[in-house]
Length: 227
Image (tube, rainbow, N blue to C red; front, side):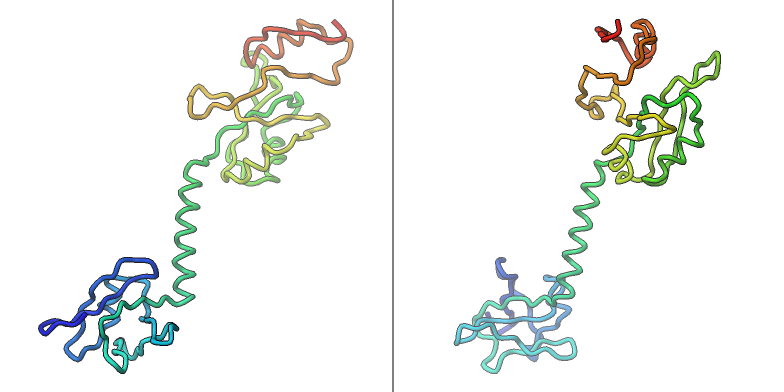
């Protein structure tokens, strides 16, 4: 669209609403003026009489009118592949960052630890999954002996996911790693309240089992083939 006082050209993105962009006195369009409205634009194109898209000449920061003038056309911006790729990657990285905002590392409980396992050995074992920023074996305050479980925390969320995906054989014993049931509603996880304890020997009594598992919570029912 051209007027007698100020000249404008109608420009839009592929499926956008046209915007009138001012032309210079010589009827050229500064790329900087175009970029102020369409930051991704590197040029213009329009539909020719043949139905094909036709590019508009660009040189030294200026976009020149077609041979027959700007006419009353709606021009579409041209975005280079490299710039489009950068924009898409930035958008993807932003979306990924937003997703990761809700994924944070938490303390993990390690169950069924052998009594002789120390903090150093615990940290060394789980370092195969990633950087361990905390490793702690829970001990009896009176005897300082291990209570058979501990806690770890990873620096990276991916390491936490990999660790939780499998069981762990530590010092000749199978151990389980879980996210503790948190008092915070947002951190709660659904857990199976019924546990199967395998490889029990005949000398393990019901009282021994109840005493051991009571440290994690109330034991409402206990049944064993040997009891």
